[in-house]
Image 1: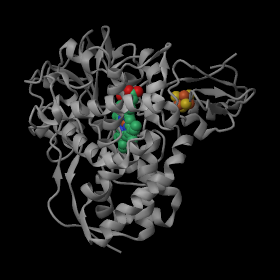
Image 2: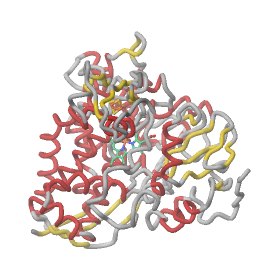
Image 3: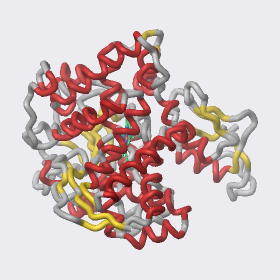
Length: 418
Length: 75
Ligand code: HEM
Ligand code: SF4
């Protein structure tokens, strides 16, 4: 048995401060070079876990939903009580077959073919935001571009009216803070629930939930041609989603489709400034556009990890894993696995497409529902920046989101000119 | 592996989609639109009647389906 007890693993991968300066590449490289799985010790957030840091091991965990469950335990590092988990569960916290039955309620809206229908809306939003940023000579790239575009796109896609988009941005901003050290008044957004019962322990999650309940009642009373209506009338095994199930579904799509794409767009700005030469290649050869998008997403690794829980004793990478153990898939490490990516820290828009990165997940039932949507948003943004010949320059201090879960950027001041 | 007389992956093989595993990502249809079609309503991938692919390409498709729903129909 090759259980390597390393209680002295530094840094603690569960500590949000570990990510304050971005992805801890050196620490991950050390873990990848260590045979077997490395155990992160117990902490104030709960019991320890196995860190999966190499791409092949990660894919093996991700695709085996029978051995590695999303429904038992929690998909984040910290422990939650069973009642709390049940109170929060959406399809991302469920295993097949019920997971997949739920997912099919919306999957047709997110296929590569279907997302082409949204390109017009995506372009309009990108155009408007870049017009405003250019007119002002610059501004906070996150507030002006990276935040409003993804939330606008996902809200429009679902049928949330434009007038509510700002409220959605505000609430989802707070959701992210729930995984960090920032504090929010527990009673915010009319919250009446104990925080531990809310996703991200955030009262803003209550706000999003209430919004969804209202939307469902409105759509049932007055159906429209939108995803919110489709989800309200759809049936799983002959039954409609309950109000609570509906609210959690909505919450998941709003959160999953928002902060992640925002993070990728924020990191895009940094790469535009640091690797202008790589984007000159894309301008010269449009065939490199998709490669540029994948490289931005790989480097951003907007979600650092998801966790699974072992359902049976098993051996992974030569390490014995016991039933009940937490197994954490570090996307932010596997995406820089030197066994798969030559010179992994380099930003290279011409990398081979196979094998791909795992920023959208390592495959299996939970592979990112919005991957095709995120890709067209990023591709359209890169294309428009290049078409306009925009030059970005740093114009102040960059603030990152303090979190052990998302690789977020809170503020990124830039100057813009042609 | 099944019969591959030429041994260079050019032999044509049929493919199957496990409809219970498919999560409708549409990677298959994007790569091989003449072989895979997603249902308009259910977004479940189905193999077009009689369609086949060279074994090497088929193996790549198996690999690139995120949910592991595609396999080669080895007789
Ligand atoms: C660059 C942007 C994005 C990144 C990096 C990203 C990443 C991820 C990851 C890592 C997962 C978990 C995969 C797994 O467990 O195997 C996931 C799941 C998910 N994503 Fe994304 N995502 C992005 C954009 C979006 C968008 C635009 C949507 C819009 C709807 C979305 C909706 C979802 C949903 C609903 C799930 C849960 C799927 C399930 O449990 O079956 N994501 N995403
Ligand atoms: S790539 Fe796989 S999961 Fe996606 S539609 Fe095709 S068969 Fe289904």
